Length: 57
Image (tube, rainbow, N blue to C red; front, side, top):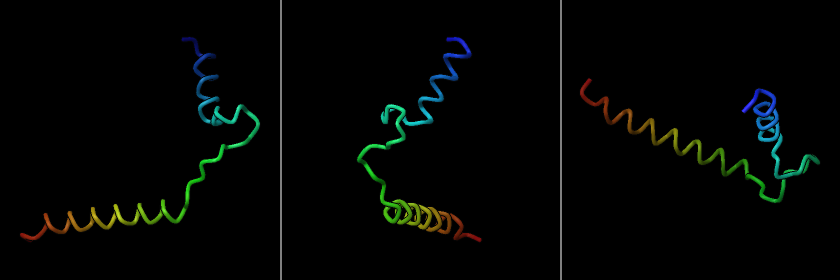
């Protein structure tokens, strides 16, 4: 694989090649509230686990 092939592949990947280069992102939308809520839940779970391991101090 040459450098130009790599650049072309990464450009297509970054632009979302499924939209065929016309700027459209498809029909699957990501709900920002669901994403944020999931991230908050994961962070709170990690905080809880961290505090459980730190009981002896």
